[in-house]
View 1: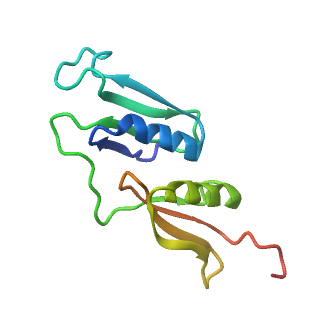
View 2: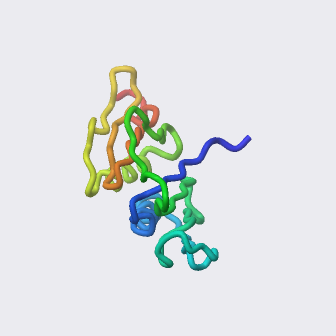
Amino acid sequence: MTPPSPYLHLPGTAREALAFYARVFGGRAQVHTLAELGRTDGPADAVAHGYLVESPVELFAADAVGEPPFRSEGLMFALLGTSDPATLRGWFDGLADGGRVVDDLQRRPWGASDGQVVDRFGVHWLVGFEDDAPAGE
């Protein structure tokens, strides 16, 4: 079974957001405009469907056309143990660039590390991993 994948409807920033996420997570952004898909319900160059290619994180986005754009309250996307600790630290820092750190990425009393960040597009992320300290520390 495939897990749920985020699909963001953004206020005209889907192209920028997908390029940002490709830089943070790796891979590249693939976008298809309304014009490419034969749609006339918005600006021809608006993103009708976009996604990350060759990325370890699955993410889709489009420009909100005829519907409200993405807004999040009480929702986080969890990247818990989805990669090695060094990669997750890099993702946290990348997501924080232009965003807001809610809770620093830090070691918790139970031995795991996690932190929260709201990126520049308003997406709330929980990033974490199990203890990566060498034995004896």
